[in-house]
Structure formats: C-alpha cells, structure tokens
Amino acid sequence: GYGRTFFSCTSAHTCTGDGNAMFTRAGLKNQDLEFVQFHPTGKLIL
Image (cartoon, rainbow, N blue to C red; front, side, top):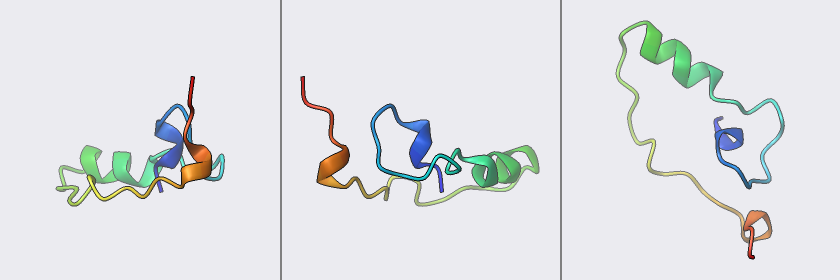
C-alpha cells in the first residue's frame, strides 16, 4: 500500500509506496492509482 504517502491517513506506517516505486523503477506501468480509499476518521479538518 501507499497510504502513508499522504499527509493524513489511517494506514499502517509501513505503507510507504515501496512496491509502487519498485514497479516504476523497473519500467513497469502502475495502474488504477486513483482508486485510493480514504477512511473518514483519517480526514484532517482545520
């Protein structure tokens, strides 16, 4: 997962996008990255 690439999230601290970075570095195409689910409790309201 790559939830921790966003400022406010409820993802585990290990979800840093390493898998996606490996795909990109290998020249492979990442797809459907726009389908990230945000849980309402992770929403930062100022």
